[in-house]
Image 1 (cartoon, helix red, strand yellow):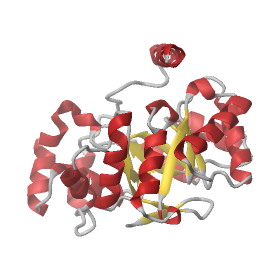
Image 2: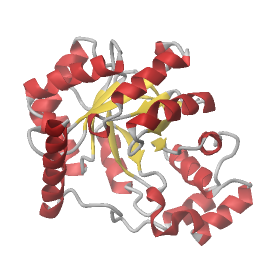
Image 3: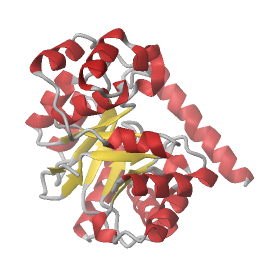
Length: 289
């Protein structure tokens, strides 16, 4: 597996398997299948409510812990220094792990500064091999990089052919932060798997449109997350190292960029309201269990 080197020297696999929206009861099987397919980088989060099952799969896989790269994320309801610190230790306990390879601050709302400083201390203590943020736009990323002890190693953002994050990637490079994608396939929106330009390129290389989208990110140096519930699709998504896209094809894919999210704009007040609703709903769910 190809890797990237983070700003602290840690090696991170350039492809990862994400477990967003995989029900807890299906997560262990999905992660074990992903490991069988060749993935050694697994991405979860506190808000996905499946950290425990990810940990079970890692232990049952038989793969040495040092050969796995495990990411989780601190959820908004756990922000603030003390809450974030306790939540990370809780995540480690749920997963049955002594350390995480990467822990991210999940959203740029509420007291993310306090949460990030907790990650800094846990990093210094050896509980986290790398730390970073998720969904931080260039202004917020530059801010948190400038006014903290440790520059984030990673920023995970929505990235796919319809929202390519070119200027955001330039800012990450300026700050020496590794770009990582979520929604690599735009969750199938705008009929992306059947986009005529992507289909034409896929036919040229004898690959699927999904493989073209993954390879396109690899060639941009972006750590790329994919998700599938099917083993064969998992194997397909990771099989992208036997070809390279031409400069012409990279330019063709670049022409698809709308520079607009297909999901939500974190700078809009309505998005803050939406995430506040998520936090309240999750709190009510937890209280009722």
